[in-house]
Image (cartoon, rainbow, N blue to C red; front, side, top):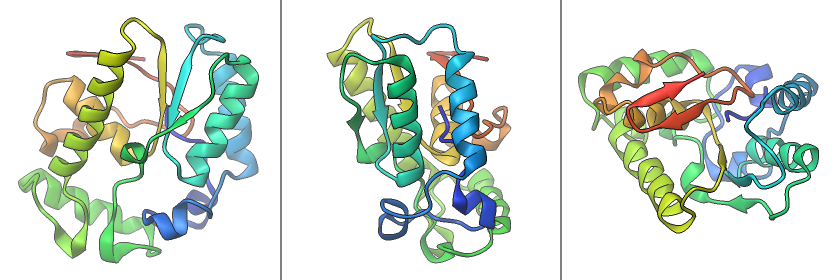
Length: 187
């Protein structure tokens, strides 16, 4: 699940550094409603769902809403590996700068233009995290709550494609939940 619409989305800025995102830029009113609607219309989720979330405020607030609505039996797990992709020197700049990074990603998945975390690095951290939880909790229903780029890149890994192709995946809307299986991404 991508977090709901956030105050950073509302302002049109990039918030990717922990010093800005862990305690700031939570959900907008629109984002709260989006998360509630997504949970209430998502059939495979129930009280036995284990929620694993980024510790950024917008993801944390999304996780808390999901947890409350599902009446989950286990506490939320917060994992820093689900944090937003670090956009380096573009922090707090216009979100129109995303497209410049994505163009660089397409030609070089190891690009660190403007100090941005490379798409290869993000793919490695989110894939390793999923594998760790899958190995520990075989057959459990896991809901990962994270951020746009991290989840687009995770979808790319599940689709067994090069990290440089992450923008070729269907865009994940705010508060959207997708089922992931190796080689398959389902709506």
